[in-house]
Image 1 (tube, rainbow, N blue to C red):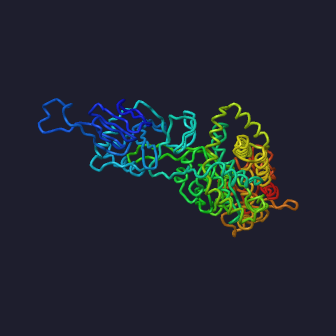
Image 2: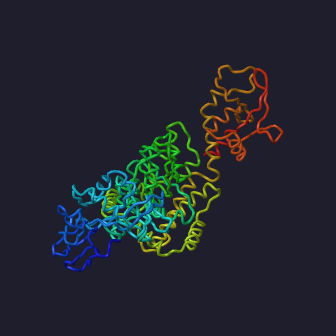
Length: 595
């Protein structure tokens, strides 16, 4: 702490003597005695002289009675601070309260008012300021000129200095602090011990791929930027009471109190951005996808993966800084993202589904679990629920400490490349999902190597490969957007084949067909559907015509076309007269490919 030399106190002396160069401010964290032998309790003091009537002209302060005015409990201005996010300045305060020492960062802009906001925070943390000395206390804070300079940030995770910052804990530097809003909920709480979590939680998670995934997902957050993997998420799908919520509680316990750290889909997109930013470089658990707005769910999935919030403006039309983050989300629900989006009448885009990958957490050996370690299902659930409430918030910071201690970025990239090679994909889209499973596997295997997880080396990789293989088997090979386009065309034919199409061979137009999508003709034993251009675009469900054609050509779904290969249509004479170029779609071909 930077205060005048005369205010320094030996913390080991029973009752140190002080002789301040009056007038001055001073802070004492222990009892002291002044020049006259008077005992002074710990606190902030103004050391001055007691002015007597007529003394103003004497100029002889040393002859005046001394006065030691107690202003507050010990509050030391330790350092100047500069926020790395927006360049704003502040002060780092050290408080000594009945609960022990605490730190508080105050923004300098708070001095622009009455200072009430600062005093409220200090009172909230256990400081005491004399009511009649409130203004004097603010003068004390402003007059301090600490030499020490710290950096601050309002976002958890990796700082530009290389430190990893969490509320109340900075790993890798003693010159960086987390600067929180007083109203911000404390997410990264710690309770119990790491040993307790390892014994009561981690050992019971062994042999369970979905639980391995949850813990690895939580630990992968700090690795994403180091190995160049984009954010996204995994979505646990299973019936109600299958164990999905327990899986999320266990994942949440890596960083904090599961009851506080876990979030819900029941929020606006803006709220989701705030929740994601407040967990940057860690994990965002999102329970019950059915609570999300079906019309916005895809947009929210894209936003989570892209890591960038929407820009806003203040009432004075000044731009606010965009929120940003990089993390993995651990979502859950009884239905998949595509099924939830379909409630609003919208089919899920392949990009959204790839950013929130479905994981089977409902039809395993014991619903969400594969191994109960000799316990009944209800007992297994109860034991883990109690265990994470007793022990939480230790594994994540311990993992980062080991990561910082190793300080091997090149080696980390090589390790990731080695793990990533074990996840095979046949297209770029599956490659992005493979990246996600690979970084989750890498994080869990590193924690095993650090002796933070009591699991067999290689088991986490095997579990992640198993879940990735299940996903591949579910979605099939090839391009996901192609499959969705073909599925949309197939659904359109099933829905409208008898109402918006009629036989091209009829001599006259069928007047019963409203909002015509085209015609059909029978070739051999097959009925082919002849789409007009507007209907084909409609059936493509938001995709451009060129993209629809590409998907059809990729599977041979265009059954006929004119000899001019630049055209994708075939010209037909229409019932009632005239002709038109129509897109000839084979429903059997696209139905097979979209399955």
